[in-house]
Length: 458
Figure 1 (cartoon, one colour):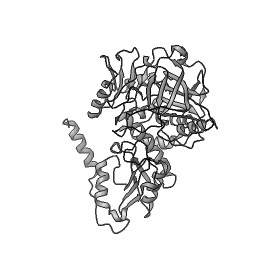
Figure 2 (cartoon, rainbow, N blue to C red):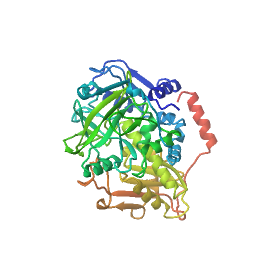
Figure 3 (cartoon, one colour):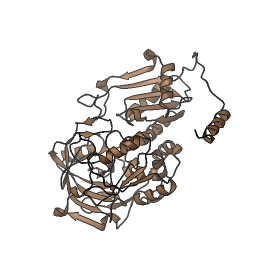
Figure 4 (cartoon, helix red, strand yellow):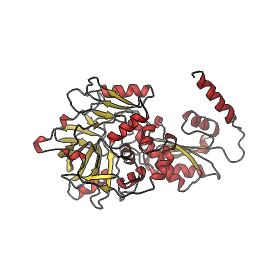
């Protein structure tokens, strides 16, 4: 499987005609790309979108790559219905990355006075944003002590031709790498890469120990070693087929106001770690593609978090509770805060085990609902029906107080220390003594009527 984004887009367009939308009209960088993507979201359409003519820029922009579960599944060589189970399975595997010479992004190189970030089509997504923001730049760095690689998405505000503001608000791997580098009085070398294969973006969201490299687990998702290349000016390796690579450092002891920015919660986020990224050099392929992710609560922004987290939760639950059937991280919870789990309960207390295990995996989760296997967790109406008919609050609701639960910095309901209360709901039927009898229809008649409706155009 090629790890070149260009080849992925071409193959996807061939396999699914009409699912790559090329916009040839002139588009303004301020608000218009976001408005177009949001209109597609309203229509429940998630094609890959390529803006070929951005005003005042000669570089086309690709976005919405990760908005569709179908496109993510296609990038892994699997069917959409297999996506979460395969992610949970493959994330256990590790492949040592393969470092290759002569990366395509070395075709063009700019440094010193040649650096000008204003030449890139960096969007301003919403009027509330503090300015143009890089959203689709994957930040790659190495642990200053162990050398383990990490990569992840962090918002970056355009400040000057060679300077970006960056917020490490996730308080995870990159923040920890930077914290230890700063304590040692050193800047943290990092690269910002654009135009990577969707599997690399998906794997960047994986939860794993700090001493393990992200590219090893991304290789598991690809079922092959990730192809990497050395940077020119810093000791960091980045995806070989990257379209654009910005090399620089996150500066120790330097802070500067950053934000607000329209975040995935559908609120403007004013919280920030206010770090500063200074650029050393820029390399790029001939005729490069600039990658962007639509800000705010968009299908792409939220979907990429949900899919990988579903796989992480399913993997963790299956290690201790083999009767887990399915996991869904719904968009109603911003693809981040809520988790629905279905299971075949064999003993009372298992749903609470599942709740505690899921909450302990990711501190960003706020609500976990566990239902029986007869409830489709991908159908939120069915989940809420189970809550309505199988739950008594004094018996089935578990609450962890706010002062005991770490939350998400970008959650506007969390306190000033980013703490959040947690809730778990056991919406399963008791193994005995439940008076309700669920209704069902024979599968044969359901399928027959589906075909009838399809044949008459419904």
